[in-house]
Length: 144
Ligand code: FES
Image 1 (cartoon, helix red, strand yellow):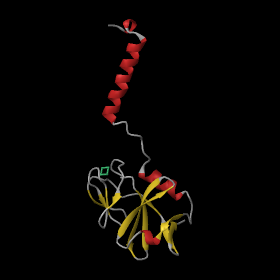
Image 2 (cartoon, rainbow, N blue to C red):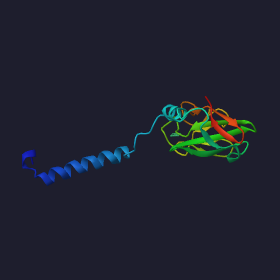
Image 3 (cartoon, rainbow, N blue to C red):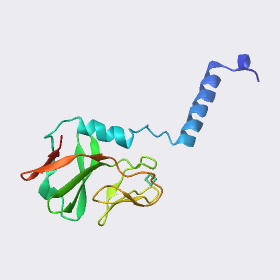
């Protein structure tokens, strides 16, 4: 059958099947920001922007925080030391999550340090993207 022999309905069916096939191959994943772009967008909110209460994260642990739709990881390696990271994994963009004394990616097993986002294991090629923060009173805020 040649193209001129196909009805409009048949052509639409072929086109739909082609799109569906492409989605199956790529899982129709929405493109996500890079870790660095994500961190830059958060930092652009400006010095002093409140991220969380200091009490929201225990010493030696991490917690997930949302800042204007950005999924972030707030860590507290020591009493008066906090860090904020983009949760976008530098390997393939999955969402890194708090784990027992570290940050873990559920997709391929990359693991990151609380204190600097350094790669502890797995295929991630670089550390998590950090956003500067500081403690002001009982709050964690973006630093300048
Ligand atoms: S996407 Fe995180 S380890 Fe692959």
